[in-house]
Length: 351
Image 1 (cartoon, rainbow, N blue to C red):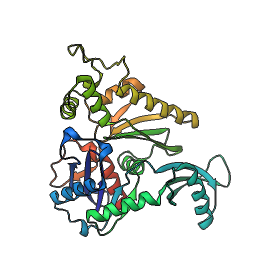
Image 2: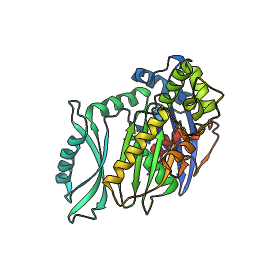
Image 3: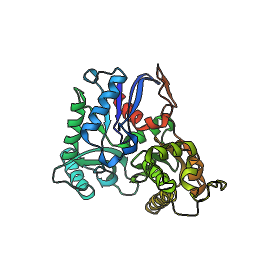
Image 4: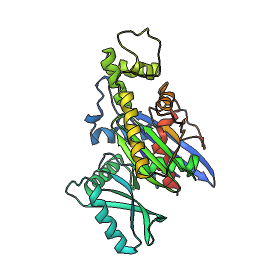
């Protein structure tokens, strides 16, 4: 059995998975808001103490004793994590480690502490003989220590695996859809504070980028357009979806059109997506995109899938993290897409 813990700004999510061969079961899952009063919610004001208390309450409600958990995978919080596919000389042992440490320091914003890294050798580079493709994940010792301390304060006896969100999403996608043989798939995970883009394929470069546009940004725009408080704006967003953001506040009777003429948080999201995908194509001229898989807590926003598809002229599908997982005694499934990162984390714990 493996436990996946997604420490979120709006909600934290937990799932316990087990497997018997290719049969996977969710033994327990649940989520809990990270705030006590939604009207005063601000993701920038979250503290370690709030997260600890929130997750302790969530585990208690699910009757999960953290001290008894043997396999735990949790998501790192913060942007000081770099994930990059690099090409390096085919070295072994300490030589490869030293080379990758030097490479990691080029890409990660340092905070005065040493670099902590992990890597996965993808295979021989197809262009340069004697070189290999390596997926490098790097962060700082300071961030690892902070995360480690929080996991211990929650009550877990073992800290387990610390994973980055893009890796968890990739593991989830491979589990559900497999690795695309031709071209590459794009994963767009829209959370509360940020959205994560991942693009990869069997013979294509791995790419990821984090956007500071997500569910909280949508709600803030509804607040400003309609001059209402956060709680009312969140309800309006969930009820009306894309229409609540794109419709003019001066004429609410105007028939909704998915074509947005004025600049909104939605059009900004599309601009950033388009910019990211163009950058990928420029760096990988032989690549092409198959499908954009939309997931995360905000993926079910009414009209969002069709809006993205229309604006990018691309095939967009929802990526349900529980598509191949049977449930046992769980009823918290109002929005299964919010468990994408948690499921990806738990899957890695089962490896």
